Length: 291
Image (cartoon, rainbow, N blue to C red; front, side, top):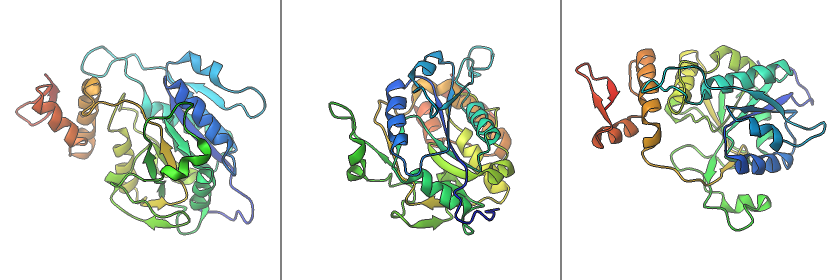
């Protein structure tokens, strides 16, 4: 699968899906410009956000912009009007493959790549030992930005990867690990591995579940994980709620989709917290429903 690249670097595409978070996108674009090597293509998928077009730089290095609007779902607990995260990632990959990408790198809009991250992912996606694997890099959650924003040249000073996932040192790679640890905010894979997995299941709409489903599908098709130490990213701070009560309808809907596909409940901690708050109940068969 790695192919005979010799000294040639594989064609690499960075894919970012975005709705809102315009300041995060602008800072990510600045960080991508510092990557060495650069991605050959940067695909931005705007979800129901026409203002994104005005934020992108002009000229030959302008990212490729595609749009993914929310599907026409009925309103209510089925997730109507929610952002099509799974479909947007698939659209980004389809666009990148059409541009000739051999390696796909996915990075959430609120994540800043380290200068070596894209190159490290590309190298791992084409190396004999790791080319057939689903690749993840360590992610550090940053504190609130100081006045003037984050100093991109000093991000490494804040390097404290999330402790719940493997975080090998730069230039090291750790093989394996439970697929439940996969996260979609920063990952990469060879184009052949993407085709083998088949992309994200578009039954998931809105927040939660689609990334774990992707990892479970990878496992079912014999694709193991690898953790790439040099593919570091830094998550820009923003306010969050715990549990994410504003997404309860989407999470319950997606959890039911996941249970139908895999026979187990994802996001169990959130579902338990929702139940304790009276936001969800369970029917006689044990299925979760929005109260």
